[in-house]
Length: 369
Image (cartoon, rainbow, N blue to C red):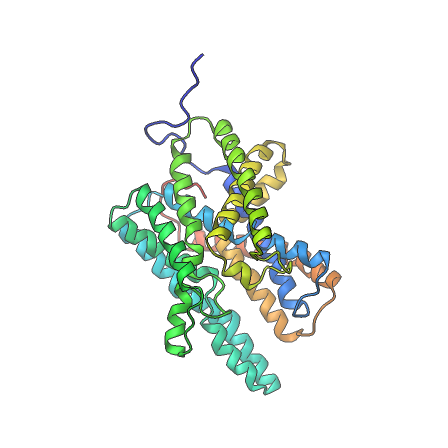
């Protein structure tokens, strides 16, 4: 019997994709955990197994998954004109600095007022211009707006990902000392440790997500599609991990703490983390029918509310830190995390419910994530 084609000539698989909601929901959960740990632990972190596990969960299954899913969402959204994408990008980019002002500048300045330590005032200004994931998300939408304006096809996006990764390799050792200049270069390739999501390092993730989303839209048999994904991604992840270990390439696991080596990784790191993301996504496609209903419902709600939860959890964490700055033992950090998750969930849902009552949303097309 002839095997059915895997892909249709046109879109057949629209609507929200459950596996994407599940991994996005887990991504925000792991972000909450790792942010609690990094704010209230002694720095540098203790090299314990608990630290390794927490830092790992807050790294490969968190930001790479989120940015990959963002790209899938761009492939699925009906608001895909250059103007609509550019408006979204500019809004996110501006709001990211409102966010760092509230999260970083105000809190560091409050500590400065209490301690009169000039270092805290310097930190307030430095962190204000740190490149957070929201800043990168804004740049990503602007990139896709440019792609829409230039009528990019899949091959052009793939080429752009490779060009950005190559430029990232070339510019990695280029440093800039002039403050007015490195505030800009930080956005592009990360010339300081306060750049957590430089554009050239991270743009391959949303581009890959976009290309993946294009395939998912055409997919006639998701079981077969995700089996093929596992056959490719798992061996690729193992091979790239072994190669990195043999070559002494550190993408975070060298010291187990997932710091600058993770945030400023190179092309091999892109491929390794992308292999993990695809494996993770495929695994949850096959796991989803076996998960309890309340787990699926909760993760899907967190996925829909991910931006609001990101803002709210950081505000709770940093303003708690202002008044309780002494390092906490791990059991207290975990207890705080256990309280933080439902509090953030409740506040995000309440805010969105109030927003809907005050400003009913306009009808919109479906989205994958």
